[in-house]
Length: 281
Image (tube, rainbow, N blue to C red):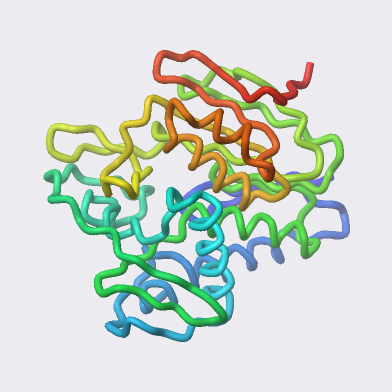
């Protein structure tokens, strides 16, 4: 199997391809999604959508498919994974790609959380809705890449989808130590962390994980959460939901049938997992 890596979606994409697969096809796929769904590209379909004044808009194509996944994420997480937190990300200073470095900003007033819904190709939203599709788009793109035969295993910014029975994944804590190795096999895995993308806002150091209940960067005691599921998209939703639930995160994961297993790193470095967690030896 061939190993490749390339930059996309503000991160490094890693991929393992069979000899008959072409890396250029995978790169083109990621570029096509990013050109539609990036809020950092002023000419993307998402940026254009965020600038439009209408409260009801027909949206199709790749952007429409990712919006449908974002709606599913909102439903699966009971509102904790909400694309409309994009307005809070922007207000707190995450208005440019993290790769170029974020400048310190003043802590803003709390922006409202707009309500939105996407169904049957139609987006309905309140005024002021500013959508961010970051994690959802990455998981969805990894899933489609594997499902469409562009890669056997692909990982992007913590979201991984595998079609190989023998895939095992090391879980690294915020200090760079491997705390577990999970036998993923065929399925999805994602890690959500509030230690990867941080910057100064007023007298706080904040992360890109926005809690929609407060529309502020989370102060969860969970530094990072990893979860497995059937797809990378579901694993992404699970990992972020666990992190935002904080002390109740693993209990939520244990009670949620579409979550395979989960592992989290506490703010004191302690590591905990769900009851069904399996670790490779």
